[in-house]
Length: 270
Image 1 (cartoon, rainbow, N blue to C red):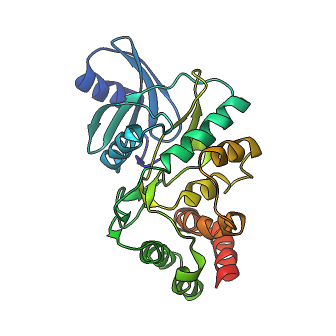
Image 2: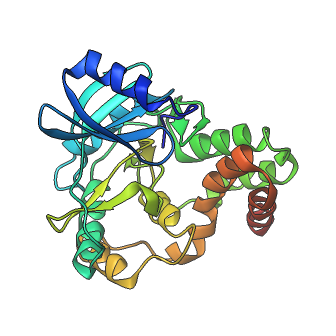
């Protein structure tokens, strides 16, 4: 989630939303600084904190990708407030996984002119949004930037120096950039909806690796993805490589075991 801060009180939330949108009928806390509310008969979600404008722009970019996963519509954006439509959710089904696979593959068919760019946030972690003309420069700069914040430069710098040989061909394409399962909502329409993006020009394998960070990606999803866009040879061996960035993000935010895991992955590719 890009919009992070100390959760405001319900009274303050209701007042802020009423000032912006009119009559607010109900407000219910979700996770972090997110709230489900009803205003003028519409079910909406509000989030407070830094990064809201970046997230709004990311949702618009994802929503404009032909055939890509659906995303909530942006209703209101301010520096520290984002309001979107709410997604009518149901329990996950096999159809949701297949739809996500196909829609992700089509999203990854959206070419970007440069690597990087886009959001200044990955979750609650600020990052340099500068664009680069080649993949190794983008991924190397981001790895080194994050490694410097958790004292892992000694090993991550070796990986960064090897990215020319480690990274696969292809790209840059439009990547969600923070695609863990908490940012996937299973809609009553049968589609898997994406929220909380950190969009940038990246490699398709980046989003798939992020989905696998906390457990294997279901075969149904991978098969459906491959029907639209075949995965490149050796992608399984690169999952850990593309997980290094989100592991470093977690190490910066939470330290502890995430730092140890990031160091172990870095040593594998050093």
